[in-house]
Length: 129
Image (tube, rainbow, N blue to C red; front, side, top):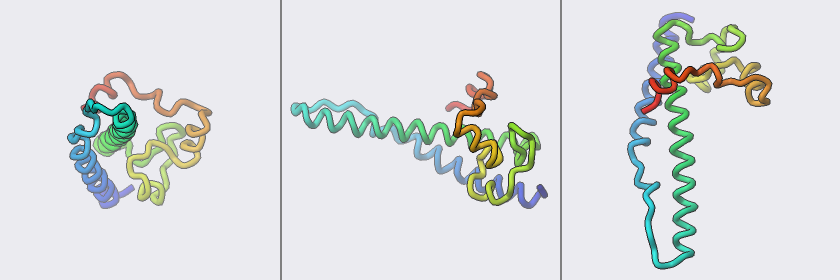
């Protein structure tokens, strides 16, 4: 992968990181509200659960984006973290934060090997926040 391509992916990842960081700051949707009506409380609890799931999904995505930026910095970006083959540019264009080539990602999705077990506690703590 040449320097121009790396810069393109880096800019894409930095833009996604900024977008996700701004969205994660708004946590008003998870506030617990009390209402006199039990049905309203159930509805608010459902909405809060949805907001929490969205927040969790976006936090995980932000962690993956930051991890990809780290791989750009250390020179391992664009290489599958399982089979060590090059990840096709078409896949990187679609999912620039991917860790795996399409074949290994399918194996992760089928639970043939643990995809995220390679994250050390130090990496998780560094990427959290």
